[in-house]
Image (tube, rainbow, N blue to C red; front, side, top):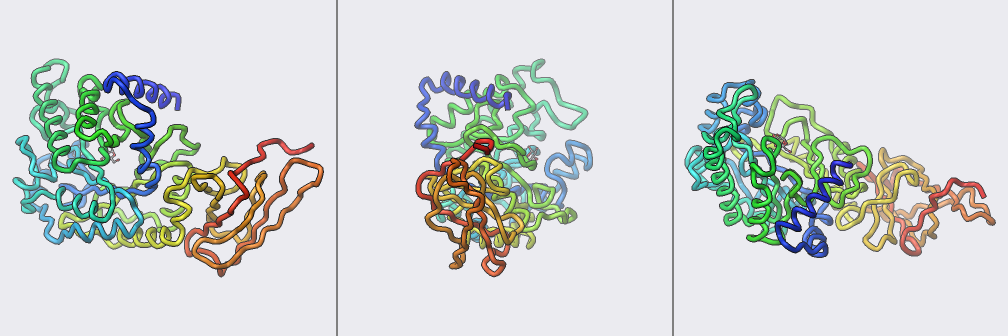
Length: 439
Ligand code: GLC
């Protein structure tokens, strides 16, 4: 966390230097849609989708020879791909943005790059730019366009890194060759700026070089010149706008303003038929509620097959999540992270004016309790149900300022299939007793 604070300070000062003037209101303004969005869909689609192997790491860590991995280009057809269907499914899940892998670490671009490198137009039977139709389809449905781009490019002849135990050269020893690569990768970013004009850039792979070597300050500046409102994820060595924990849930509430947990549905980012360890819809929904309760977003990943079809397990999770969002989205989208732990055993959120408190019931218990709520509850309801639970205030002592315990009964018949949400309309902005009890 201290590291993050330092990075934040660096980020603000670096950004301030690079853009001369950074208006915090402008940053907050441009981040607003992201703060309200809560759910994004990550899509890992690329060469690895052909044989269903681990993404680019497979050859890097020598689980498969490089030539065999790259031969998957011959099998990438996109033959059953319907971007409108993808967009419908994303919309149905409730997601407000989507992030597609425009290029993974192995280097194959999903658009017809002019930078003389592997791409779906020239090197695969798909023979087409896959980005343009996808982003058009989602934008038509009001979904924001996020582009994943790997700065690492293990296939590029001028990129130093190759396999985990060998590299082509050291960037420090051959600055001219490194400069060639840098010009290439920044050229691809410029192409994407023009082709997609992303609302959000999702960089990956910054760890292989320093901020100076990558010239991340320039990368950020160029992106913002082209689109000042573009949001940049936190994998740009201190030059991003928000943090990106991966797979593992932060146990304590992150302190930074904006964050996003990226998470796969099983244990693989891309299509991987032998990985059947899928999370259940209940697990995904409860993780999602926990993220939102802690003020973050969930970027939930799917891994389509090479032909563009999506495995049924993934479709099912998106549909179930979407159904839950339809019933309970009021407590999720456009809300604020909830009250601190200790007041309620489970996730909570607040309306923007903090006068409505939502309680998420993990495991659908029949009775829950809220502690230390000073407000009067004007109304209580269950989202997606007309049943009105009753509240019993227990232990309120007339002469003490300590609020009583609020016991709420929730009958099984009124519960959501996955996770019930209670809506408490308070008499004003939430006010909590944080003391130790007693007199
Ligand atoms: C990691 C992995 C990459 C994956 C990404 C998703 O950076 O290197 O394979 O695409 O995480 O967050």
